[in-house]
Amino acid sequence: MTATVISATTVGVEARLVHVEVDTDRKLPSFTLVGLPDSAVRESRERVMAAIRNAGFQWPRRRVTVNLAPADLRKEGSAFDLAIAIGVLVAAEQIRAPTLQDFALLGELSLDGSLRPVRGLLPMATGLGEHDVYAIIVPRQNAREAAMAGGPVIYPVATLAEAVEILEGGVRIRPCVVDAGQALQAEAGSDGYDFADVRGQEHAKRALEVAAAGGHNAVLVGPPGSGKTMLARRLPSILSPPTVAEALAVTRIHSVAGLLRPGQALITRRPFRAPHHTISDAGLIGGGRVPRPGEVSLAHHGVLFLDELPEFHRRVVEALRQPLEESRVTIARAAATLSFPSRFMLVASMNPCPCGYLGHSRQQCICPPQVIERYRARLSGPLLDRIDLHVSVPAIGFDELQLGPPGESSSAVRIRVSGARQRQLQRFAHEGDPDLLCNAHMDGRHVRRYCHPLPPKAGQLLRTALDRLGLSARAHDRILKVALTIADLANADTIDDSHVAEAVQYRGLDRPVLT
Image 1 (tube, rainbow, N blue to C red):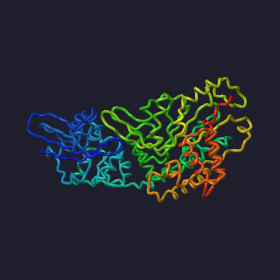
Image 2 (tube, one colour; image 1 turned 60 degrees about the vertical axis):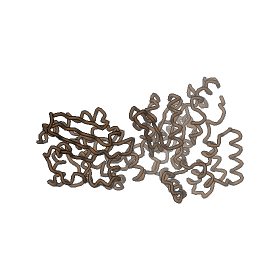
Image 3 (cartoon, rainbow, N blue to C red; image 1 turned 180 degrees about the vertical axis):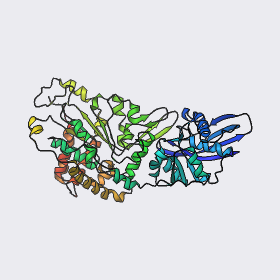
């Protein structure tokens, strides 16, 4: 007897349909599993055998052959356990499942027959829905996550026996239904960080408001203890809340990476990722024998914070060029070539010099100019070109810390940021590009369309800045993007000289070193 059960696996963050084909014949008892399984899939034999016995069924005293088709697609993980077990029971004629072809089965089996959650359920449920699968049987802990896909009917089960009852048409378990929009509103909230906690640093807070309004990359430059990390950690609190589509895109990546908390169905806040400077290029960009998403993908639609940017390995930092430019990273390995989304805001911090006190009002810098030049040379020109705002964060004095007024709350800043983002969405609505969401996403043709022509005074100011600083064409376009964002925050319809002047002042690292 043979049986075919529908299942799925993930390749990157995309789902691939897998047919679990089971054949039993009356030869010497054995178990053979083929179809490019990894070690976790090969070990399913012991889990499935024990689960079938402990669920009240008998392991067939026959030769059992399991094929995971297509045979040329590598299969990973333990999500095939449930499909293999059901396939064996149907092929051995221990159960009747007349509606088996209407269902997909996903889940890891424990030895006692209960189901454990698996990672990647959201992208797999989405992919199965695109293949017109009517219903999916999943572990109970994964049910809300799978239901976020909004396609197939999701049946949560706790044991192998419950899955059998559903397939045989017996006890009907109530499907899990979740509205992603309602879940996003219900679970959204503050993470406790607020701009009101930051005293002083009005210039830096204004720069981060501009960065948040236009989705721009920024680097914070200042001495130790000036509040660079404190400011960066509060940047997500002024970003506009994620849309349902953005939340689902982020959740798919975190699901594949196995980073969802137990019972978590949707990531409702924009990610904030802050890897240590000892991270490898594979950890930052993604990689492995079979590529997995790295920090740039885990920060998708959120913030990637690199503290002490010059301390990161040069090769690691330079690897950021592709994801910063293309909002996607492609990883080629012998086993596969995969692409992961990586649309994030890069926020970095650094000292102005190795000792950290260049330009400090109370501490003397001891670094010679050539040492400062070598320190800054750790960041290449092409990388700095891709960072829109170079923000000075000076040391803060006692009076500002103790006597200064409290800072403006994140909620107040977020209103202005959301208003600017709404203007940008309206501006780009007719472009027909779903990935064009803010000014930072514009390419050269968009810059020419929406930023030109400049008023004479603004154009002359930009020309002077380019000549004196020796900026590249990419830096020219980025200044215009930032100027357009500043205009959006001011509810202005066109860019004027004040907007260009503010945008130019955010190119501090392009100026020569002065000691």
